[in-house]
Image (tube, rainbow over all chains, first blue to last red; front, side, top):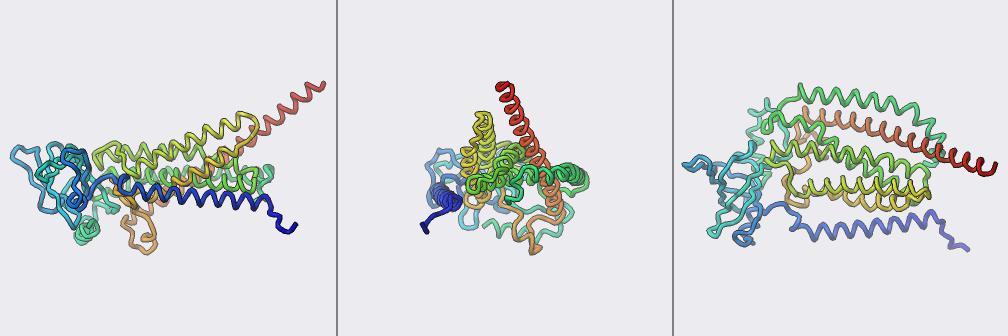
Amino acid sequence: MSSVIKPKHQRLVLVLAAIAALIAAALLAAWALRNQASYFYLPAEMVSKPPAADRAVRLGGMVEAGSLKTAPDGVTITFTVSDGTAKVPATFTGITPDLFKEGSGVVAEGHRSSDGVFVADNLLAKHDEKYVPREMRQMSTGEAHQKVEAAK
Amino acid sequence: MHGFANPARFLRLARPITAPLLLIGGALTLAVLAWGLVSAPAEQLQGETVRILFIHVPAAWLGMGGWSVIALASLSELVWRHPLAGIAARAAALPGAFFSLLCLVTGSLWGRPAWGAWWVWDGRLTSMLVLFFLYCAYIALADAAERSGQGNTRIAAIFGLVGAVNIPIIHYSVIWWNSLHQPPSIGLSALSGNSPMAPEFLYGLLAATLGFSLLFGGVVLARMRTILADQQTEARLRRRAMDYADA
């Protein structure tokens, strides 16, 4: 018999076929999850396909520079969440995390009110992938622009 | 690879390098962590909390690396029937589970000051938690196979291979999906000197990873030797019991 396959090679082919099928299945699952597994809506998605008002959702993007304002009561803030293409006004009452500031990332948990303003119940600060020592802060004004560009 | 198939030959090699791995790895890890705690610079936005980076990131990598070891060992057990492969996979499971848990715990401690939340169900955190559960399941499965006495570890090997699907998911979770966790700071850009992570953090992180990896290797070798010694003891006791039965 010339077509004898060594058991070792048979097992290898079997295992490789199983792995290929598994990876295909995982990719399909990940692709199907591409929207559901996202942690938040971007402003562009919030504007183009707005979720029902009063449905609990998350909105993520950059706090637009110059948009952060504190109301006279001192604990209510309003700001604009932007992703470079769309902007969503948002409001929040409470204590903000340390990293929450203009020009940096934010994930707001809450709902869209009927007038289009996002009412946040909770704010999460989103850090980016940059790690810069404090001493280099002065040097990084150019990087700050870069960061806003990269976030778009 | 089959040159190491003989446990005696493997032991001759493993015995002298276990202790140096543990000692050098321990010393390097302690030195880097002490540097990270005391001398590393504070980060411009996060301030002092960034120091946990030197534990959190190596723990995450080794948690994923541990399962890669399990997957490769499972492959060589299933295909080539390598006699030490199953032992290597079992030996890597416990330190892998430990590092995954360390990653989850330090990440949680870091998340509170940086994000404002101990835990969020975003893609990265969830897939890492799944990895920890996979480790627990693998350990239970491999122990059950061992205890049944038949030494049929094939089910554990198949599970080890299937679970490897989670590793790329962990890596790409911050790229495919919007997540609260930031995208990777370390990639090919580090080679071109264009890293988003400043060199102080980058080199400290790489040194910490080397130290933790040496420790990981030392623990895996020590555990492999323990499992081999257990099996020898078991076999010897069984032989003796049979001798008594014959007498």
